[in-house]
Amino acid sequence: MRIITGTARGRRLAAPEGRDVRPTPERVKEGIFSALQFDIEGRRVLDLFAGSGQLGLEALSRGARSAVFVDESRAAVQLVRTNLAHCRLQGDVVQGEALGYLRTCGKFDLIFLDPPYDTGLLDKALANVVQFDILAEGGIIVCESRREKELPQLPRPYYLLTERSYGKIKLTLYGKGTHA
Image (cartoon, rainbow, N blue to C red; front, side):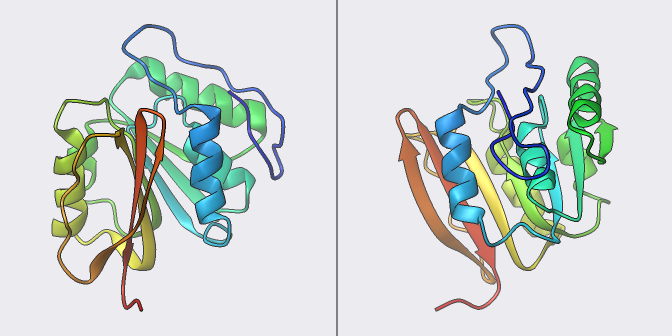
């Protein structure tokens, strides 16, 4: 794992150990940031279920104003802190239950949702984002799931931006606000 571009370009990231962990593959990460390339600079980012923090770190490297990394694993939180320091980037790191964090976190412009597959957490996180209205107007939610997973249609003012598949992985992007 490495940072693709920006101020920390080329820096290698420490990766989590164990079979339960599933870092976003490089090709998928490139697809995410290709889709977001004009929607990062100056934005407030939430990397929920952060793991190594690679998605939030990439956003910070590309000019995001701030990032919050949330994971309930103590090892993951330490890994995010290590990667932030290695990349010479700043962000807030929260050890805690992701769904609970969404109740009081305020608004974000860009939200990364990449929970462990087959846990039901992605659907619950999306429902909480909508219920607690934490996506800012004009914001984007990026969801990573298994290719065959059907994600819910969100109520207005949320809308589906795009779905893209990369092998066994599907990216689903939602926006908020008026659209064509």
